[in-house]
Image 1 (tube, each protein chain N blue to C red):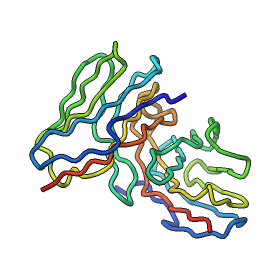
Image 2 (cartoon, each protein chain N blue to C red; image 1 turned 90 degrees about the vertical axis):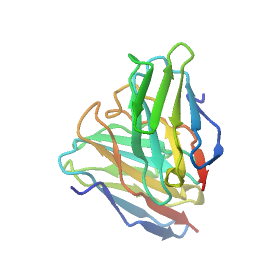
Image 3 (cartoon, rainbow over the protein chains, first blue to last red; image 1 turned 180 degrees about the horizontal axis):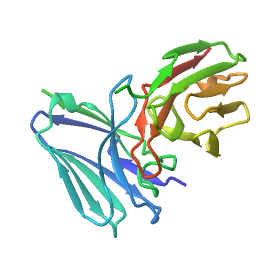
Length: 114
Length: 113
């Protein structure tokens, strides 16, 4: 059973454009919805996260939109820059992110073309 | 402050050899996690420690995999009789306590030939 489905697998966006990555989950017990960013040779790093009591959270150029009824959340990167080129993972979980092993999506390889 | 460190960064082992991978978590972090990341895939959970207690080892793929954290700080992931399918990046993460963010190390890339 695949608990987390992430799409697209890869994405190419022109510099200055909007990058959108989607994540669908099945477990209704999840209460923490993070996005991680991973550069080659590095471990994943938390980029932005949302809890289910709000539908949207914005931090700089990064926005999470959350749809509880559809069991989906998405990452929007505004004014995408070449430095945003990385692999992005969603990893929803039910313990606030700290006590349980995270279940990662398969990842989205994002390339921002200059 | 220092982040999570892992050593070695790269390890090549012949099939059948035993390997030991080390993780130094952030000082004071109670929780420690090990993940396995195959090429082009997301990390997969292996095991979790709270201090020295291994509370969850449900992700360990076989009894050839063993992890320990005897003094509640440094952790070692040991793989016995390595197989080619064990080739992956092994990531360690730590968090201050329950419901806090997990911080990841750079990983150890294991290649079994």
